[in-house]
Amino acid sequence: MSLSLRIEHLSIRAGLTLLVRDISLTLTAGTPLTLLGESGSGKSLVMHAIMGSLPDGLQAHGQIWLQLPGQPAQELLRLPTAQRQALWGRTLALLPQEPWLALDPTMTVCQQVQEVHQQVRGLSAAQARQQALDNLQDVALHDAVVSQPPVAERYPFQLSGGMCQRVAIAIADAAGGQVLLADEPTKGLDEALRDSVAQQLLREAAGQRLLLTITHDLQLAQQLGGMIGVMRGGELLELTQAEQLLQQPRHDYSRRLLQADPGRWPVRQSSWTDAGGQLLEGRGLSKHMGGRCLFSGLHLRLQPGQITAITGPSGCGKTTLGNILLGLLPADQGQVIRVSGLTSLQLQKLYQDPPSAFAPHLTLAQGFADLQRRHGFSDKALAVLLERLGLHPSLLQRLPAAISGGELQRMALARALLLKPRLLLADEATSRLDPVSQQQVMMLLRDLCAEQGLALLLVSHDQALVARMADQVVSLEAHGVTA
Image (cartoon, rainbow, N blue to C red):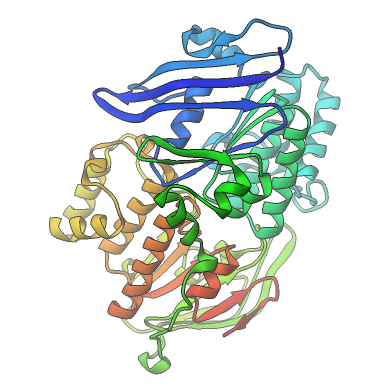
């Protein structure tokens, strides 16, 4: 029998709550399968059910059959935990949605990739190190051995979000598992790196591995081809050939998903004018990191109600510039001048990795209650924001790890907006959101800029989104500012 993985009538529950309902699909060698759908629809839960890594308190029912060449088929849900975990790396390789959490903070990048080659493939230390460096080169970390310090010798906290994402891809590839499960593999990557990852995933599928990808990136889904499924509310709405779904979707939600792609948004009629005065100005800003210049001699002005986008390749210093403007990092040269009366509380940041911004052992309700005690916003204000962000109030009773990445990102946005900031740094604010939710969040931010004079500093790789949202663009690739 050839390699395959067959899911039959999979349902996932949290107590009496049904999170995934009666999912059936089949992975075959050489044919990528991609799942699209709204944040919180259960896509990642399907992947974790395959791995055997569902969070505590969730139960999977149904059957998941893994057929390895020359072996009897195994029903994964019936295997003891030890046998399931023995498949990790060697047979089942997972690229997680949050690489920042998956990487070991105490080990360098090279050590983590090298460990996979030694433990899973049995290579010597010298062989494993060389293979690890090759893996890093494959994911476009070209300065893996020449920068100062080399990327290979850095720790995760010394890397950008996009660089951490690529390290996680290198680790998953190093494992060489016959089933590759990729959860949002292009999140936080620029267009060139997204295309590179797509080609790498296609090579994996062409090498007779099974490939299941979860993504909100419609361009990636189109590049991978094969089969595409659309999930919503825990159900698989449709599953068909990629070309057919992207051109003639059958379900109404699938059509909404495609229409919500930023490239199809109506052109924005900006309501911002320069009559509102200056909020913040950066003069002659320069910053060096890792032995290289990120930007130098950079000038920009931020004004109330204005939307400013920072663009450029992954790892070029977009987040660093935002942090300098907020006073979280010092510039090597230059100065940041704020308008009189602008307090630190009025400068808020929406982090690229929302799990790092929440206390993991407190429910979201406990976290918001603490914020309310300190800053005095009303229950109604929270309820209104949750509704505008498409979040059900019941999610507040969960721990941060018990909701989807997209839901947590919107919770982080709600928390920042409750403090009524005058300047919000949104670092890849919609990278974890499906296109429908992304459009909803971006329209809310745009409205707040117009209604309340919020200045929005938007870090993004999405050129279509930037074109529809920004009043001015700071391109770090060009080290300059364009209107």
